[in-house]
Length: 321
Image 1 (cartoon, rainbow, N blue to C red):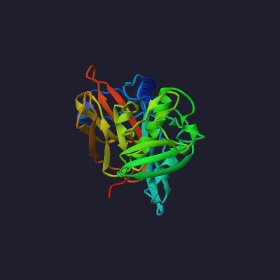
Image 2 (image 1 turned 120 degrees about the vertical axis):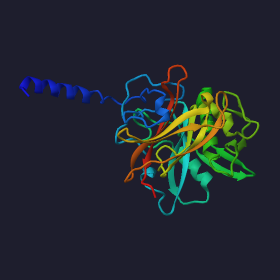
Image 3 (image 1 turned 120 degrees about the horizontal axis):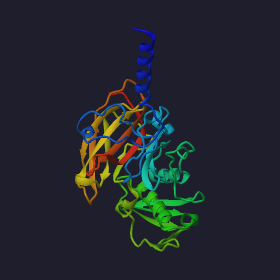
Image 4 (image 1 turned 135 degrees about the horizontal axis):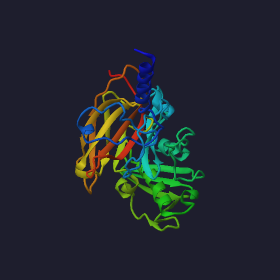
């Protein structure tokens, strides 16, 4: 092969390789065939999960190998510890976030204490930063659970600030955090020891216990409640939550940090297109060591087959038993 031909061949190889590299961005657009079979390795979740209802609009890219995870996700529960979740916000949508606390029987109090502490510095930074709407000055005065109802007493700063979104959002964070426990079905609020009937200057009426369904507006269309953001993913993976998508159909994937799709399932929620349905799906996957990865969910646009309602949680992948 002469020198000119060799240089031309090298140029073609370099051009082909460069087409797979890009800046971190939303999930790639794919065809409906992705739901049916194995995705190509370029179908990687973004380092910036997309808020429900917003289809990706920029070039595909793989998440960084250093995908953000909480320290609790790096290993299974340590002896003498308790795993629980708190609910923070990604944009304006709730997301369950892994926490590991010293072993305790008072899990409701431990969960509230962790919630009031807010996101860690790592979780609160970067393009996919998590946030809280609960004012930093808020303190927990007391909490008690009776007949399925948690009564939580917080200090006055809990209702400081303004805006209905902020007020409803902080109530949602507390309600979802406490109702993760099977013994709690609803939450009533007290401020500085006094029962709350009307919350904040926004005039939010709280005449009865608040339940999860009161705050569905703060959920993405496909809400993964387990695994939690930053949690350890069992093998095979079990993914549960609720969804409100067209014909109740969507896809769930387990993805390695380099973008390789390790496992995928088509999911059918119990209800869809205007109603919230539950889902519980198991996804086999294979890795030979614990490593960062992602759980990604999405559905496909009825208009053009592109991905929409995309969400990705960073998790720690684990070898099978």
